[in-house]
Image 1: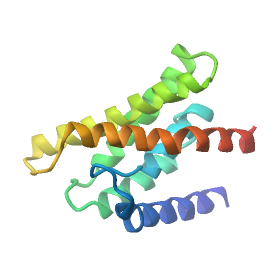
Image 2 (image 1 turned 135 degrees about the vertical axis):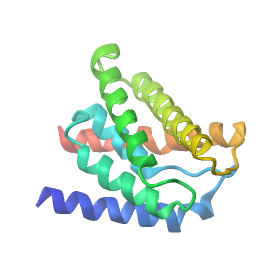
Image 3 (image 1 turned 45 degrees about the horizontal axis):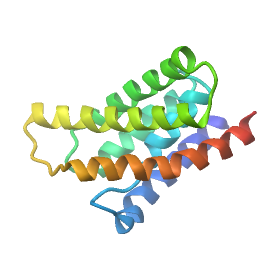
Length: 156
């Protein structure tokens, strides 16, 4: 039942992200809900416990983004999930707002840079600016921090 509920939530978040959020763009960036929830679950539960989120969410992100090769978002979310869990367990022993912000910044950077790297290797043209990256980081943090503490209060 938890698996089915997770899949339904992932599907709804990807639909929301691909249909509504493009209208909320600032500097050609909007929050990535799947990335944010993968970061939150990696910090709170570990990288193995949110594998469904990573695999299904990454697959749907690849399907709904027309310029990503299939599997790019899955691999980048796997990398982000593992690194977020590693940093939350080994570097930041105690979860604080500072550690959540740093993991959010790092997770967004790694996600975007990995996708850019793959697009460069494959030879797909894309539009990228530094202001878009900064806007994406800030936008993700604005959603990540309150959502993290809301989910943390509900889980534990």
